[in-house]
Length: 293
Image (cartoon, rainbow, N blue to C red; front, side, top):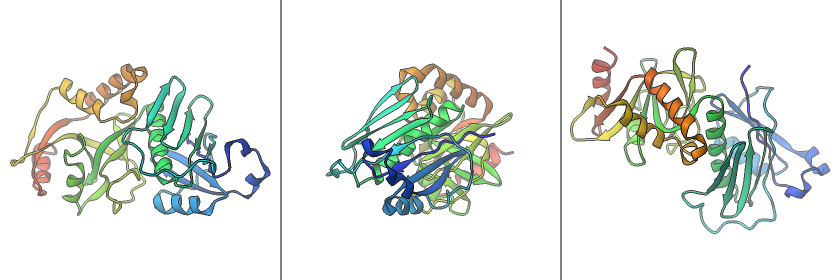
């Protein structure tokens, strides 16, 4: 049986979380990869926003972990967006989050968490979800990674690289295919292979909704170039670049050894290359002729 992580979000103040108002809560459940999230709120604006933001990721699964998150009415609205890197305190059993104007916690051991933010909740909830999925994926032998994902000839391909390396460009050049995401993918182990899930954490909101996992046939480290070709790279170089693109987890020394071991195992299982590409779709013919031949 798969594990599911349920998130409880409401607009009651933290100290009132046990009040009778909870009897009036509304609920929507979404799925990110193989992880379920329950969003509960008496505030219809939150339910409406989550439903629209994660459209196509709704779920009817009935079993999950129990987690509570609260959005506080007592905090002032933020003046601007969150800083690029909100403060994370990563410990053995979870993560504490500190926003400009709020705070939260994820506790894997107790399967409980909370989120206190203002009514300008969209950015805070989105970031919380990303941190949550990163941690749960890691704790269940998977990884959330900065990468684009495309399904080509019923095979899954992962294109990874730093910001500006061309992940979104790859998806724009693959519009005739199934695009899983242009920024973050969930990778989990299969029986003898690795599978990739689409996530809603995309810069391109026109992304495909594809709920099923796809077997990964190759990982490509992106290099924009005037020429199009595939280059073999050594395992050490690939490992360093891969780990650098695993958000949240790679920022904690507590996870370093396990992250390196898992990434090493993944790269030993899957073919990986440096993909030099220009802004056209000619790289697909190179992949077909040199990787899939």
